[in-house]
Image 1 (tube, rainbow, N blue to C red):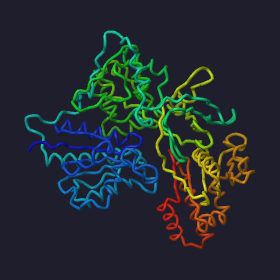
Image 2 (tube, rainbow, N blue to C red):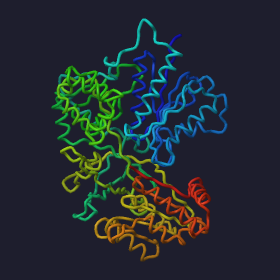
Image 3 (cartoon, one colour):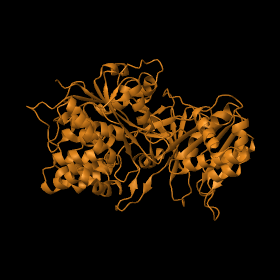
Image 4 (cartoon, helix red, strand yellow):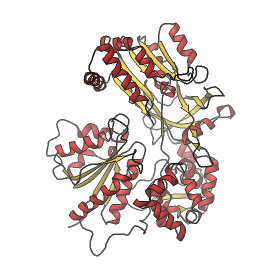
Length: 597
């Protein structure tokens, strides 16, 4: 029986689901199956009715939300008017990626699996529920599930006996070939690519706006442990528009010293130019790369050499290694039984792609340039809550950025790629431009003039609420209640004078929690409990909306617990009724949250 086209569709927020999907694609090709791998929203969903075999790989983002690149698919697949026999010719499997510390663990995968069955699809296997919290990460669930999946698939579509399975040690062909040019092009394609023609429509990932940075100001005191920046961009003439709750996406660049080191370890000339050619028809070249492109541009703007490599990196590196000892170690790291050792070598200390390549110099020096784009993932854009309103700051966009900097057992401190890059830019020394675009966030605010809003934003979580307060004050909307928490009033109280001035004018009611200013730590959830009568009155009698933003570790659960305790104590509700009350607020969008790891 001829092999059908296997289709792998992914919804990915941080890149893990995409990485797993590409692994599925490689394993399919080793078994001589034709395989396409696509993001769900780039696939024409109406064609699903004629697909015989589909694997869905989807992460669960935030509070049980689908990732951004599958939201259109999600809306379509849950249409009420789809017939129950829509997918009766389709065999499918669903692989989920989630985090069991969240209430809605793998919610998207579970719900999608049920929906595909409702539409007549035939499940090859129960859904796989990968868990970030497992000591070996999601692979602990994925490895055995994939073993069972291939047994099922090969039972339906056996490998042709004259071809056989391509063994793991043999590298598959690279996706692209790099054709090096004997000399640099006369016109610099990179400058042309950046300038481009006037893009159709608003800026996007394919065509970001190069926003001049106006200011880059540290807003924590010099003695504070964390460097937090308020950064302002000029967006005049960009066509960008945004509302409170929206986010800006920024694609960072690698440090110049890392680019040099990478080229040295791999024996590449940073000033050499190449053109990129796909090996297979229908495979597009990355839109972010100009043609022709220099090695320096590829490494500084595209290859994420500062990311922590995934297991697939070690698998391919082992295939490409000519050095027996290094190859042996790389095979160990890529085998299922080597995952604990890989975790302690790579994930726990947050060792980067570049550092691993330096640890395996004979292998790194032998990596063919054609495999660079297979080996190293692209730099992903980073999302920041917009911290200003166009009604208060026309033609300006502001963000609040905590510069990520911490130590592990490695000698060099770990640094966040985007936050460190942004912090290093100084518009006082000359013009600085940052590629950015905007997308809707997960927070939306009521437009009615007298609906109160309760905003809980500890630390940099206050950023979207500054935009909301500015917007609401400019529109004359009243009932703005802000709970802000930080460590010290004089060190990390962002926008203190602005909040106090609005409070003096009667436009804002501010409640603060300075956690380190007394013996017992006081957080925003303690203030919510103390002000229980007000919170209950606002929510139950005045129809207030409740918003929460900030770090996902512990704080959202603590705030939810504080709220349910207010519902019990002030509303006289039983435990189950208080939980239902909170669930109803979430369902009706009167409780919204935006949290990040």
